[in-house]
Length: 182
Image (cartoon, rainbow, N blue to C red):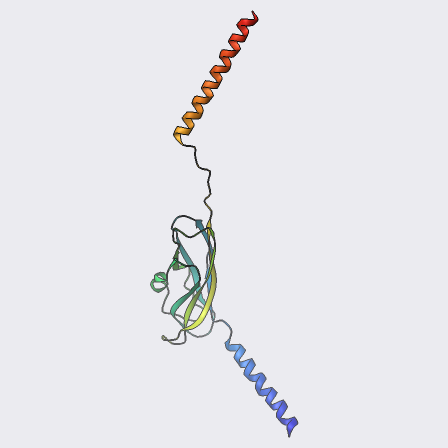
């Protein structure tokens, strides 16, 4: 009796796992274009992320919300574009085309560096589902704006005056020396 239970249990377990794997396939695909954006550090920048949402499945999917995972402090993430541009649902095979999804604004005090986050679309089979349908990483790179400062006007004039004075002294000494040699 023990040997009959083991194969039966194994078969049931495999069917449960196999059935679960079929449901784990992504029905919605999300592509950010571009997922990497950059701007100068030391100034506040507005980065607009656009993307495409596609229903690759065989049933209608409701796009009910979105979510961010972003650890940088002081940044503003605004998902108004998602609610203005994404349809409430996507039928099988439908795509949104390129639409604005969200914006990220860095604080002026943010130092140069890479800031990484994840953007997710939430929804499901009903208008009240909030399952994660698709996620996509995004990155904002703030570049250093290190420049060589220009010399001030007073410093430039002083340097010019010193060069003219040195040249005049050199020419005067050269003339005196030439006269002595005659």
